[in-house]
Image (cartoon, rainbow, N blue to C red; front, top):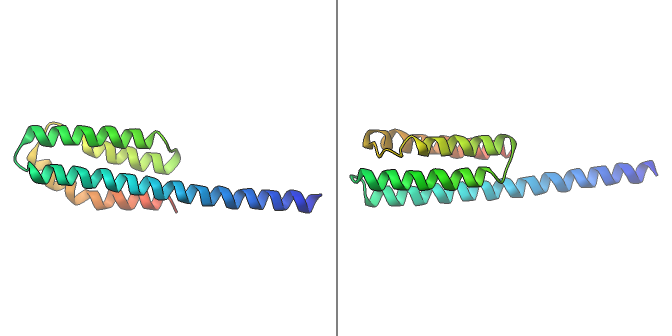
Length: 115
């Protein structure tokens, strides 16, 4: 009986870890998609502060929605990314270059939260 209980605990832990890894992979893929969409939009309208603000607001909303599906470090990393997008909602062109440079760091933080 104890062996069966131990096996059940090990099996469920393994499956849980695998499920979490799959969820993390999905979170990272979705975050990357949001960042790519944002980059594409602002590249097309690089001098249009209104377009940059709108794209940033949309990206922040999508990222917050994604963060709501997770908890712990993954949610925190996604919320940090959303906060980064929010800093650009005013369409400040000088902030775009700085944020673009930080995007890899956000991506790394999300991936690191999954390990």
